[in-house]
Amino acid sequence: MRLRRKADAARAVLLAAALGALLYWQWEPPAAPASPRAPAAPASARAPASASAPVASARAPAASARAFPGAGPAPAAYDADTPPPPTPPGPFDFRRYLRDKDRRRFPLLIDQPHKCRGLAGGPGPDLLLAVKSAAAAWERREVVRKTWGAEGAVRGARVRRVFLLGLPGPGARAQAQEALLRAEARAYGDILLWGFRDTFFNLTLKELHFLAWAAASCPDARFVFQGDDDVFVHVENLLEFVAARDPARDLLAGDVILRARPIRARGSKYYIPEGVYGLGAYPAYAGGGGFVLSGATLRRLAAACAQVELFPIDDVFLGMCLQRLRLAPEAHQAFRTFGLAPPSAAPHMRTFDPCLFRELVLVHGLSAADVWLMWQLLHAAPGPACSRGRAAPGPFRWGA
Ligand SMILES: *[C@@H]1O[C@H](CO)[C@@H](O)[C@H](O)[C@H]1NC(C)=O
Image (cartoon, rainbow, N blue to C red; front, side, top):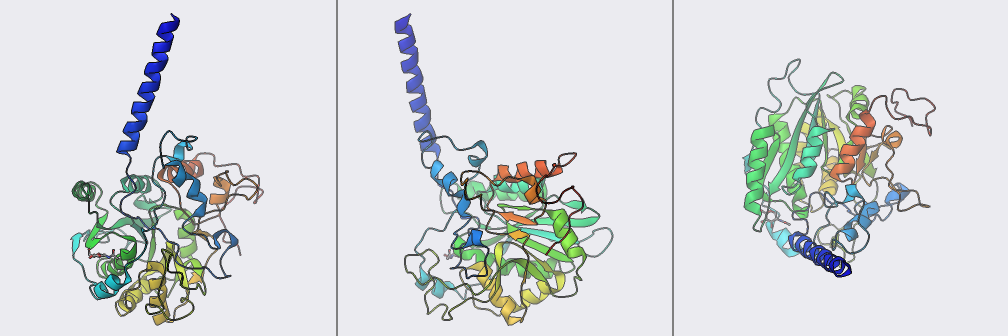
């Protein structure tokens, strides 16, 4: 009896070890960087939560928990499903970048030519959602489609969606991933794929190509939201925000970063040599995690960016285009492109409060499950009972 129990225990241990080994063998680091951003040393204008924050610093523990399954405490269930936003593998090859910089036109391999056509009730959509994604991040796209990125009528506004992608690879899975994108394009009609490699430093190419595509294929969109696939967007709040605006006038609003200084430390992933950018501070720009622009600004930006030299950080690049137009991005508190900071007294606690999200337009740095859960919590009837902040749940209002 005792012996048998011992044998059972030994078998269990062996099984666990085999499972661990199998998991480790299967585990692969996240492939193409989706859209990490930690551009610069943010100046004083930034919220304290983001000061010196690389990409969504609150998510760091999740990253380390992935290092070896079975080692250390298991991560919370919703941390395990999607890779945290990856950071670029440094150091950056500037010589090569400068050499390739003038190559800025790549073919559109998967188009959605009818995305903005034939809509009932007006020439273009009221809101076009354009989400930067990478082939490997299928899970994120799936959740965005099912939650805040759903197409159709949202409070009477016509919403359309596209995902912006570059070529996956290299690697054995690149081919399968490209096949996946083609299947998604057939199934959902929301994939735009261009013929450049989908890397962190090619996000500027993605921006440039999207602006050109939108200006040509969706020129009548009243407003355009652009963001990453690891954000939660409160589309109703966003629509309420733009409802008061005129799409024929300039608007670009988001989490505005002022007077950010280029990072001059050679070791940094975000190192920008003086030869590439000589000035002491970047022009004002909106954090690339998510921002909204008017149709008028979309068309003007597409033309302006075509004249600006490529710059390896996409949101700074967009700031340079804005500067060319002498257009100041509009700051809004409700765009949290650096994520939400957990309370300092309880750093392990996740700021997962639907009452908080109710007041926001955008939160950056979430896993696919986080996004789905927040959507469920926000849309659960009869709605979250929020004790803090507003006394009684009422319609969302744009405060100061
Ligand atoms: C951008 O994409 C092009 C075309 O695929 C590739 O040659 C280049 O190396 C990429 N650049 C970076 C910085 O990843």
